[in-house]
Image 1 (cartoon, rainbow, N blue to C red):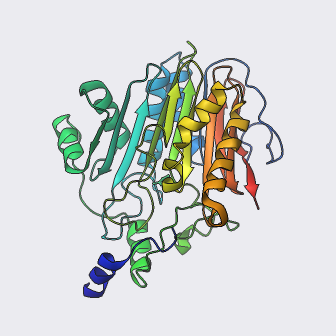
Image 2 (image 1 turned 180 degrees about the vertical axis):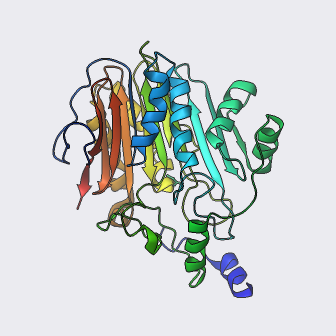
Length: 343
Ligand code: GLY
């Protein structure tokens, strides 16, 4: 522990389709315009299940806001490396969660560095609806959640996270890299039991349009595995991990949060759509901006954006190969392999 403590004190960042029902879209195709509302899209393979959760509302004419909360709650309840209480801990061994939500009227709520609460997205919604604030963090966010009736869950790691943490502790090497899919289908901290490719997503970001044509979005994550205690990424930051402008469109981000925050990622995508770019081109331009800022180091990180506009057009783009997003509408339910700028 002493060695580790010393390391904790001294170290700084050392570096910083599947088709279900119809056809596979390859990375070279553009996503066709979806005809009609409602529609929901979300990041990574886990988005397929999350979209089903959202559809319980959207399919019955429900509000996009209810859909994006319910949708990502599905992922928060699943066992995964990077979302919910079953996820990887920080480097001190604690799972800390970040989430945000935004509706069609610029109302937004966010929680960060939240511990022992199963559904941070729902706490974020309460912050939006029941406080005059946008963001609560740490013990204050937890106190608010408990006061709102959320259960304080036991402070224990899931078996998968415990195993991953024990493996990480053997070296305690502080090289935080956001979990991304690689050619083997999993990220750098995936334990061996996930070699079957189930280790397949990090943050879940979701944006939706309901039958009334209104947009909302949500984003939830445990952030980087084995991160410095107190580290936040883009996911709880309105404008970075998520942004919604009901006149224009909505966007969300996944990947290395630091590099999304520094160029206000999701807001940038929405602004590109405001200028008339399609969601795909808006995401591409934003990715190109990340790459320009990052220079040579862009080869070492993954960032991806996903967007939906008022016409029901969707698009995504990533720095590297491997980013997928899930789409569900009245006539589609599929996983799309996003285009990327670097091999
Ligand atoms: N995109 C998630 C994070 O960086 O925490």
